[in-house]
Length: 191
Ligand code: DGI
Ligand code: FE
Ligand code: FE
Image (cartoon, rainbow, N blue to C red):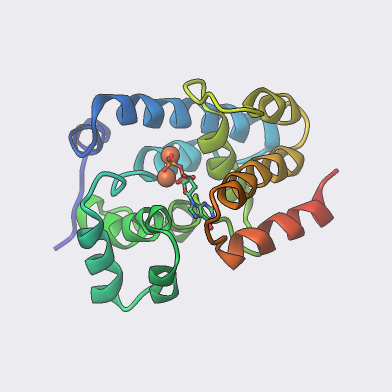
């Protein structure tokens, strides 16, 4: 069955899947993603849609997130890494069924918003960076990321991944190899 929701219905469903503060974060990512799309020549409508849906599964019990990956036989390598890496791919798998959104560019931006990937598209970069720098974010270095984002998507995103990698190293946690690969590739692309 083809699902077709209005914009307001989608917003309502996303909003009710998360606590108020996470909805505020989502709204901040939408606003920031549109600004970045306009600044760097991306598609603002796709940026807005991917941002709306990017954390749809964030507050699902982790066992449900795992089940989505296992049932779809998708992204199983992630199950060996930290649980915070699961919600993006889970959302990318569920969104076509629940929201009728099937645009592969939008689904990829949702899927890779936490980890990044090799060959990140413009939309991937916009959503991932908006997630780091939306107005509600407050972590050491976030203002530097916002400054870099005035001129360079890639430099700002490298600074974002650096802060995540540093955070994981400080906590003695594993780093998903794709994040390191994404960061290294962006360094070669930055201008
Ligand atoms: O869902 P959000 O909180 O908005 O942000 P996110 O989707 O970027 O998730 C960030 C969390 O993911 C952060 O606490 C770090 C964690 N994480 C755990 N392992 C990795 C990782 N992030 C990346 N990029 N790579 C990892 O290996
Ligand atoms: Fe997320
Ligand atoms: Fe987010």
